[in-house]
Image (cartoon, rainbow, N blue to C red; front, side):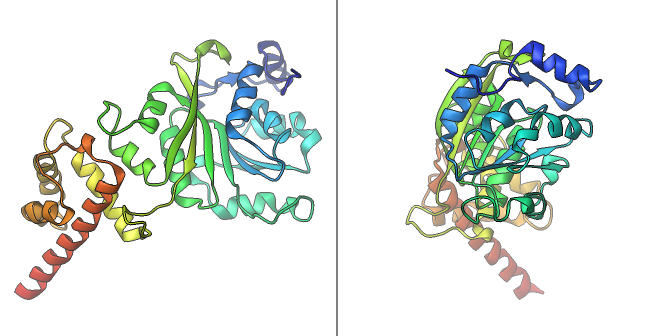
Length: 322
């Protein structure tokens, strides 16, 4: 099988860095992929097509970017290291008409940043999708979990994410109800996406090798609906996420006890909800003796809707007594 990226080796990675007077930056979590076989597996799992518009976070020197550009129609990458744009301009020169770079922190990325960077693509490629359809990245591990959830929530155009993350983060992303890795983060992510394939990546596939095991996980967007198939609006989504935090505030406690502790410490706005919890669980048709880890996403949405009704009742009581 032909190599996807000529940069996928220790010698080539070193050569590129040294040619630009650079070295890896531990503070930015830079671990460069050096195994072309891993690139092949990432591209296969991502199921890229010529009309795909790919978003990449942390392109580094362009090792994965080259593989993406050989399979997708266009790629926009986000890079915060100010030393790397000059490197990418050189390594990705053959694909300059289909590659664009946004120079900023991935956590601050906006849709307008992507539109501005990709304006050069207009009229040169099939389709008129102004925003990416797939996220494919070797993510900086410190922000990986935040980026994936945030991007699914904010960029509705994303159909899937195929990402390299720390093994423990992948475990949380793919966890099922009842498992030890299932928590508030899993619930929030599952509102938007569900896992669809995974493979392990050992430290020896990177330069320098990280001190952790890694995994590549694919997540596909799922409809944001309740158990009756009705769309979930923004207010219900916010309330559902709050209930996920409340249910796992004291993981080993029952829903009743964990939620009571959580809401009692929320200040004047939500503390009164702690007194309405019996009614909340009744509205959600859930046994308060269960634990958060046993609930699926549909049940958390029911809790979110019940929280909204309880909040409304609390506001009504305050207005009546004012």
